[in-house]
Image 1 (cartoon, rainbow, N blue to C red):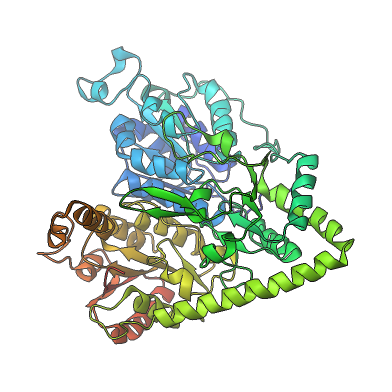
Image 2 (image 1 turned 60 degrees about the vertical axis):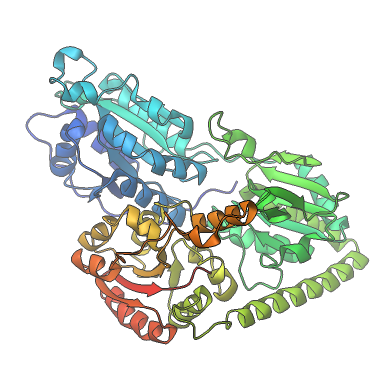
Length: 597
């Protein structure tokens, strides 16, 4: 049985300091400590003032609170921390209004399978205890309804005796694959009531999470037989490396069967410079495929088709004669509200299982089958050489393309990616989210699982998630690099203050193209389709007049900062100065102005 390894060294807890009167809210502090939560990002609110006092005085700020100027930032910190470590954080939001502020961040955690333990409080459900107006407008029936369609579970326990079992169930549901956020809500009057008697807590040593979903042995044997017979098999990986073991397990499988891997990117699934990695050449991998195996690949269609963004026409890259195998538990996470589950895959074999168990099984059986056939082993050796040749040629071609417009001002995104790589490649680095429109994947060497926690999400997510990633790697003194889009930072600039206050060292390199260019591209497509002026596509898209002084903004919140820099030749020196500050424990920002692509 493969178990999720813990990435966090359990610290020695501060001693609790009970007051003369014990309070119900103390029980929640005990639960957070029992379940090993190290940090609690939050935005303060009167609805959980009793719990806040218990955390500060009874719990002695252990787990440590991280004050955030917006609920989205608090949840994104937990989101990024979970992506980087596999471990959850507790987040607290104030009442109905704080919960409504947090909706988008909760949704992104849900679609990114990030375990986040969200807690909140409601005004007294006993209307006789409500303050005029305030408690009425801050109370809903029931509060969890606001996010129920994109959380795995929510609960609003009534009495203190029901709190420990609710907490334990929420933790179990959150951490059971496929993982996702949960929400527990507590009545203000419950939190502020004296604790009248001891409360039965979850048993120490009890299993908090059930075992993983094991595959059907016969189905895996069939998949292994197809895989060893195939002339041109392809492995698609999306979420298979959400556990650190998944990265090395996939390498073993790919090398055993000599199959190319296409990393879709929800997590870093495969070494970027491995000769079997054809993520940058999906057409070469797929055009002659006779077997495609999807390994927890919910977004399988993104890399196996071409898309005309104007007409929305999708064309498959895979021959119709190819067999498909799906190994995942995607059907277990389907919501009736959000269609994030993608188009259904009409697979020849569907195996409901956790790839953390299925991939090693598949490798073991395939290895045994191949050992019996010298012709197949020779065929695989020839195929591996062919794939390696394509891999090498593809990387060489991208390296040449990166030199185009090298001296342009503003610099190209390829030059920006190159300059950053030249400075960080000898450091123990981590890329937080953005891939600079694919250029980091083309030019950087992602050689170990923690280098990249997974693909960026929508606008107004990246700075908060990057903070969580940096918090996760702080103790190991890794250089966390956030290539930060300007439009994204404009949503949550207060996140910069959080990094300075809590001394979370990170390097932010602005990907500043002075626009919301993804949408600008769509307006260009519409202009071409409708015959309207392309020159007007920038209206309502550009972040100019006035230009944003991101370096000045960062300095105002306690960061070291430089820029704006438009000339690529000036980037390297600025980054080296900034990295010195980061190594000294201070966050640093370098504002680089670049082209759109």
